Image (cartoon, rainbow, N blue to C red; front, side, top):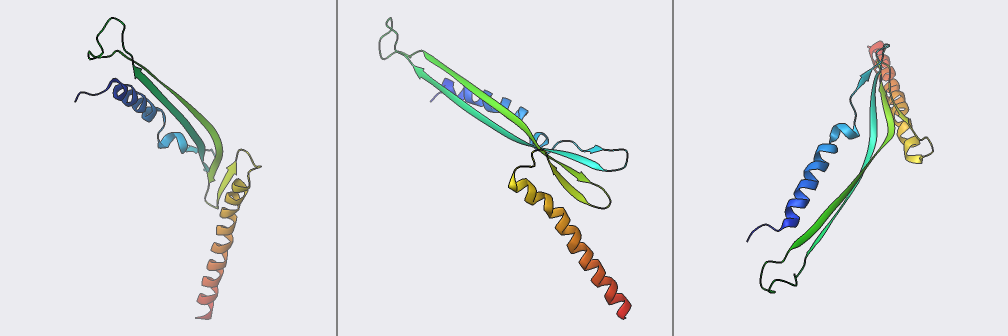
Length: 132
């Protein structure tokens, strides 16, 4: 059985989408500031794809002959910045672009909690050393 023309259309569309959307689109290239802080952009990528087609009987051909095919594909991609991850020697911070989202606020508190837990663990380690 030969490939249907819609397969070629879909394969071409998917290959082009793969080229546009990769991991570097979501987690961007790191940027190092003069003070040594590394800033990593984080984005949200959404895309949609629609394809369709049909075979039509020509008035000039017999019904058992190959029917002409008409088809098309459409795609859309949206890339929205979500946050910036700032990493330096002292801490890691997630700086949301839109601070109104509750999930962004929760994620922003994770580095603070990690710092507090690290401080507790290091202070307990110092106490253990002084007891010896």
